[in-house]
Figure 1 (cartoon, rainbow, N blue to C red):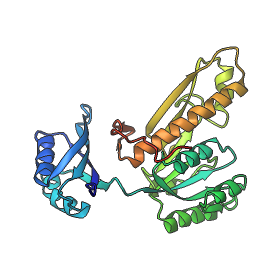
Figure 2 (tube, rainbow, N blue to C red; figure 1 turned 135 degrees about the vertical axis):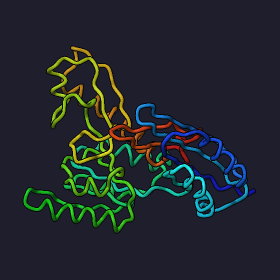
Figure 3 (tube, rainbow, N blue to C red; figure 1 turned 180 degrees about the horizontal axis):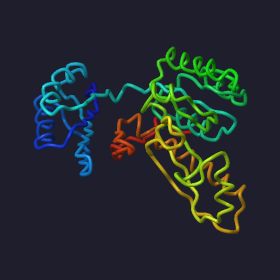
Figure 4 (tube, rainbow, N blue to C red; figure 1 turned 90 degrees about the vertical axis):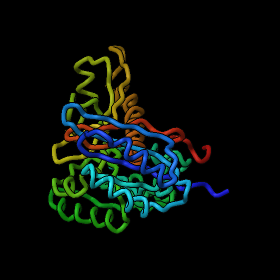
Length: 297
């Protein structure tokens, strides 16, 4: 028996009476079965957000579902999208000389736990060229210097556009992106910051944390904006440390946290669970089975 097509409907608009009822009635009329649903009313801004997973038991295509939903979206002045769950997000990963996040993402991708198409890796160094190529993924070496930064960024965007990438992941990429790229790819660049923002910014936050005698270290994944390390936060995690540990211990512990936080943020984005709400991100919980791997090891 052929499985029914599965989709995710995402909706945002001003909160008002009847939205949920209208959506549920529409899906029922289109012979769709809701399998998971989350919603949130922001009492401060009056905004409403909703994410609905559903099976099209009538076999209706995404395009037709979207076209016929427009009557509801017009009625409530909604922004909406219907995503095909089977369609994988195309991702470009950018990395410098710290490879733990890249290695983690490649492993998750290889075992089917990270359901994306990695269409390229960009680096300003050659450290991970062989590893990436061995995964049959295109590797692009784009050196960046103060003198060639504009040209290098133009080449990066060329790679992104030619590959059809829908998301850029900064897996410890240690170059600051220009305002132009941040604006062009707004909501489509995720960065992992190796500290629990907003504390201990800069190049060596673990050393700063050690010198301040903190008891918790952590990592933050956020959407990139023109404000350095100030973008809307998607995911965070902490790890407990003690006075008996060294700054080098902090770094090692932090690497594990960074890898987990970045992967969770990417999962949330590609599963259409994130909604940028001003300076905040609404993150809905994952649907059942969202983290299942296709295979082992």
